[in-house]
Image (cartoon, rainbow, N blue to C red; front, side):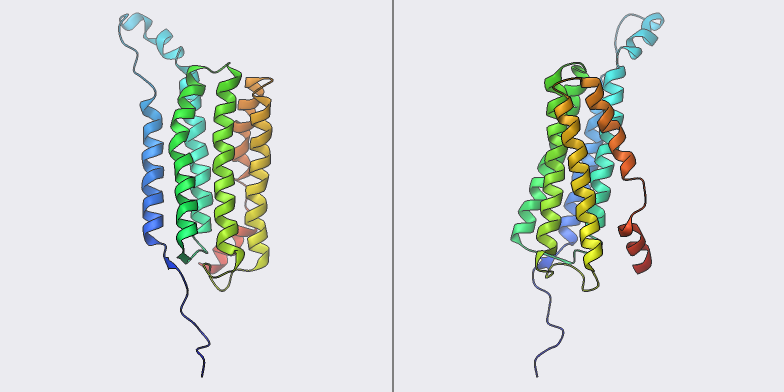
Length: 209
């Protein structure tokens, strides 16, 4: 008699999750290293020198939250992904490549807050991260060989739509960078708030746990 519960295909995900968490931790730490402590001038001018760093402080805070959004999205995917294959390993590496580039894009934006190219570089990085995360999810759920058996179509669609919505907002913010850098940054500041709201995914995860 054929086995009604065949062994799952692919490889375990524990090493993928460990690598991803480590990369995110390093990227979040590297962000603050782009802010240099002001030197010279004595105590009297310290307030002014710190105030001059506000673009770097702002870009640091924005990117820390942005990395948090990406990490949460990645984490939620692995609530359902149980196995991985070679294609998924490369998709995950592509995602981490973009994650590690974000501190550089943050430094560019912090040093040139009014330059259109700086906003476009930053926005393009966020868009690239979203594209990688979407490709990761689409591949994982395409044949359902890599995900849990209880994953229903509504959750698959909900995760996909949340990523697509974020991509659309990020694309708008990137295009705005050519016109008005302040408007572009405002879009990226607003983006994380869309992911604070609970969704079908949160409800399903809470039910399973």
